[in-house]
Length: 208
Image (cartoon, rainbow, N blue to C red; front, side, top):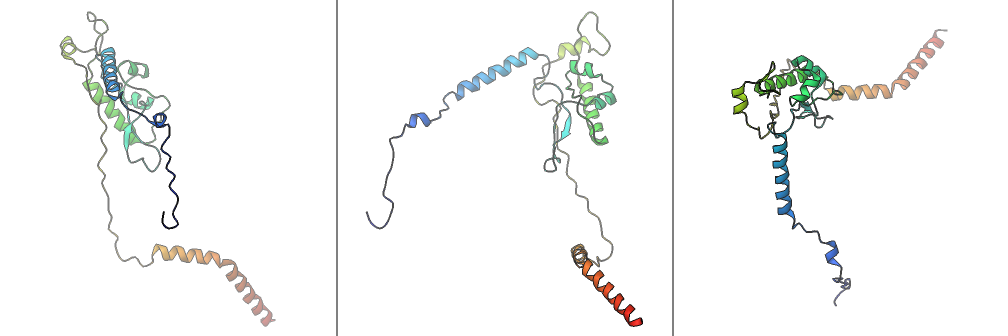
């Protein structure tokens, strides 16, 4: 060994089999997941595979609120505006969230339009084919219906449009300079008032 280096102390006789994580069951898991998906699709047929219709909502916090994503369920105001009862909505594949409230008119109108589009494409199977109720689909539509696979009314991000405005004339006073002077005036306010008071007292004494 040359120089002042650390002496080699390699420890290779570890129980390495205890620390190894294998992934040999990956093909089996893949097959099992596929079988579960097929079984679920068969169990809920002829309903859509994607599940109930969800509203388009804004993600919380300032960092993510520019994104639209699927929410838990439609609010009661949205269902009322679309003319759908809250109990009836669940029976035709519409998710309902009684806790959610609409904070803006835009979100309300967006989800009402979503509900109306869903209703226009909905094929409603009658409970009794011999006695169809009002709103049920015709026998031809029911016969031609297939189970919908894929995203149910997918949510697309709106295009970002940047608006600019023209500033007429030159900016005489910069915002940074204005703020700095305001901070400076606040800092020396007491001294200036004390100095002005002292000068007033001196003038008053001279006049006497």
